[in-house]
Image (cartoon, rainbow, N blue to C red; front, side, top):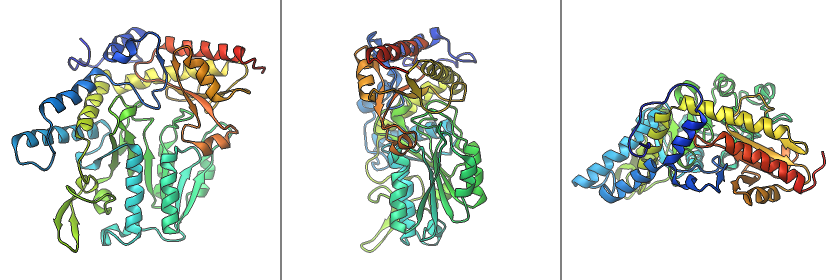
Length: 434
């Protein structure tokens, strides 16, 4: 029986064996193609049958507008929609009211940034005063952020007259915590940073950054896109104020993301998008808004996608996130060690042996990343090439682009070995000299 047919008991403790991974792969029809070695899960993950079936079943039997109709079908759709919220919220350690549906993680991060911008413009009344930014205030990000966790803060700084600062990284891409302690100071109002780098695969010191932010009374915003699919994540235990993650990177559908926010903060923030379904009273002159999460969910919601994401969460939970994390760590170590051992190839990020998820980016000396990617693609190996929406980080590391291999629960050790063989052959093919 596959997980698509029913929820099996949790598997045994410890890293997944190769045999277990092969059994789990039966839930992913796209992986039946033996010519495909899919190592681009950091960009988007494949979907198990449980997710595809959940979306289809909803559309076939439960499709109706949620939170609107008074008829039985609408009530059933609303119940399924809110059950999905509860499932996903519990998966990251949040309360139901603390999880806002968005179109993706980019939308979640922009929701926070624009809501704070609205507060800074005087919207939201006395409750929103705590969020208001003025000239002289500072927003702090890090040098390794995905553009989705950089550009919204650039724009917010421009709109409010506040100053954007960043925590630099060292030559290996590790955050400089001594410099972080200098950058995060009395003027800091927001600290936004990623849990796991989408380029380097390293796990950032959330506890240290949260402590620095709390020490000066700043809000924390966590980009958890690369951690929620690969690690057990409890937003309450992490102590962050807001967190964003994306469905399509964690075996779920596209078109669905989530914003976690502490309830008292979400209820105090003015909304970002406005319209139907997020209001209590509307006159021709003004409107009053619902509490979180509905105040941030204007208009028609991604109902089928939310139900599909809940199915993905149940699938992941049935396998066990601790086991998935151990599997990812093992594959990440295998990637890092293998890449670092190839002459003429530079591994970006943490050296072999340092903690990382199943993700590694590298540069082949004198060969453009797109050429490396094409060489691997000719062998059926799918990887990501380019700057991975992190141009400042690549610039800091002295490269314009890199090749990134990223794994997931369904990735095998054999696939990693095929990648390493392909990179060695690419080095030989392009005549690279160390």
